[in-house]
Image 1 (cartoon, rainbow, N blue to C red):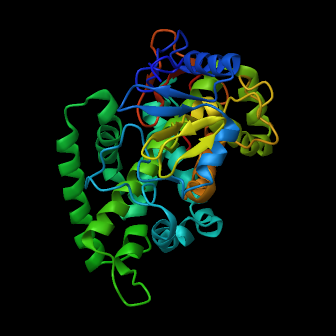
Image 2: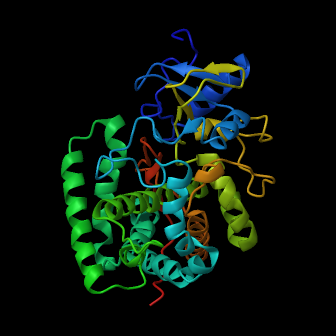
Image 3: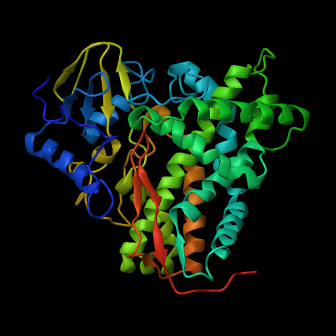
Length: 405
């Protein structure tokens, strides 16, 4: 195993290239996999795991949750508030589906569509805050703020309190690999905030998802326990902020560099909606889902033993040339586009419709209000590596405009 070409692979410490992203490093991993026809190779880091680089092999793993259990959904494990498995993500079979059914109607296309005006209003207000300046950080001032506001509404929090969520989420989801010192503090503060919200939702239930969970009763009349509610809160807050924030920030970074692409998307709203899947494929903010091998199996010609961990690394899997023609090119109308950026099989992202609407509405408002922008040569974009990866800071320049109100 130690002779594997992936023995030293560490997605938390990928080298950042001159473009301020690890995309070149991801390509190099993919190229080694293709050149050596190694679709699964052993990695020594984080206790040892099988790195999966092939699309076919990843799909086989995602679709067989009996052999490849979600007991180990992240490599290395995220540190959620409770220390228990991450709600939904860390569950298998009927346990997973039982909890998923409780909230899936809230994430349905019909319910998500009711949030369109909220997303549009958020984007307009945020742009009004910097459009007359001629510069902005479209990561920190736009891409990361829109999901914060969404989560505030999801949990029945005042919008002005939305910003308090991100530091906690960041510390929890990046701590294991990056060794951040404030993890315990983040867990404690976020847990205390949850209990404060929980008391309020019990007194004054609303239409938010936390109220739905508080009022839920199973067929036998049993309510969710405090631990179950806390697990849901932790998973929903983290999931709704991390992936969406980095996708939006990655998108504006690319559009600031690729002027023709930006103008093409600004002129064609239908193409913008189609390009959502290509932005997901190209950047793959979620690194992927690890699985615990529960029984000896063979995937891609590699024998796997019960008790081992397999890790389909999504940024590489989504550049497999066996599935994607010209995989390193950004093709806004790529079809088919069978990426795994939102996972696959029974654990496909519960919020897929929500992320799509959030992306399309926010990006379309930005391109309408500020159709031309470029990276600020006097500042540097910043990419964050962690359980999810993507742009945090995207400083840009543009011609000053007028506030809408």
